[in-house]
Amino acid sequence: MSTDKQRNDTNLTIPHTDVDRDKRRLYGRRQGRPLKPERASVLDSLLPQLQIQPDALKPASLRDVDLFGRAFTGGMWFEIGFGNGEHVAALHRQHPDTAFIGAEPFINGMSAFLKDIQDDDTANVRVWMDDAILVVNALADQTLDGIYVLNPDPWPKKRHYKRRIISPENLNRFARVLKPGGMLIMATDVDDLAEWMRDQAEAHPAFTWTGHPADLHTMPEGWIPTRYEEKGRAAGRVQTYLLYKRA
Image (cartoon, rainbow, N blue to C red; front, side):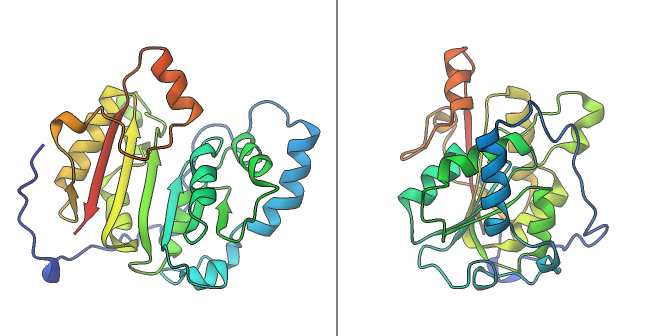
């Protein structure tokens, strides 16, 4: 991977992707097995408290004080497609002075996450049970310290590549909302998708790879593996870790 792209931070222009800004882009089912009563109950009780309100999603306007009522000394991070939420749950407990947004459209995953954190202090957590890009489009410029995209749907058929979350259009969006020096952290155990994400990020002028070829399959320091990741490792799949810094 090339890391010698020439950049001038003061002249770097991030194009805005305004076409269909508010169009919802979700594919596949939203729910699997019927929820058990405890899961359904916590979804009814806690989701309304933590859910970002749709009427707040005005283009390029949201800041941490709008979402959380105050600024956090540790900044604000966004995990896109958090599955069952083990990763963002652990982060929010470890870093109470950091704000975390988690987006997961799958109802079973959201209910699992809410059940996990229901007894926590959730002052630093906000969630969105729909298309994460709608929230990204609503965030003000340079508001995020980092974005996680961990084990996203690989959409392996070539005709579905346009559905992959990492694309030039979405990288434009991520670059707009990340602060200079902010991190885009991606991971997958699908080799074809790992190559795709590397190629997309390497081609974008706003992102610089922070690693070394030897680091691709080495778990970063302080990494929090999810059950999905551990299950994949037990099955012999190899995780690729891709860490990029916003110019």
